[in-house]
Length: 240
Image: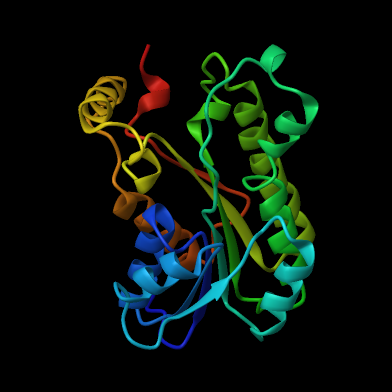
């Protein structure tokens, strides 16, 4: 199942799970394009990828920009969406409606926007892979909107799998993963948080970006998988 000559477009590919996915696909021989809002982060990420990989500045909240960027790429084979803003849990009662809508701007509506503009460009043998989280199955206080966004994204996957066939549409449902998103937390607090999250899994560990990348690679390579939400969470949903 090598990917020689295939083009993989990774939205959110400048760090964390997206960058790990880009690296994994490139090692399989794919031509990879990473997209991110930050040109500086793209440049830094490209230094960690093989020669020949490319980058594109892309804000998934900007419909016109998304359309213009995707017009530059004819017939990509695979679209992977890992983009997401940092999210601070807050009770719904404390959010005004504008802030509440913003919670879904990137993780859900951003995915919808990118997929819409990719329609007609992806090869019929290709795939779309989104990224959701276990918050949809196990929400915590203050995360109701994040849970709603994860559930909506998973419903989108199933609907699009039917609507876009033979293009395959799937998602990775990730558990807690060590990514740069957590870097703003002081190291001692971050270590304590990871230790607590690890105890909430069956494997006693927090995930690594490379483990999510392996799941996305599987969804790209296995052409008999579509409409699937692939759990990669260390068994967190099975603990009490």
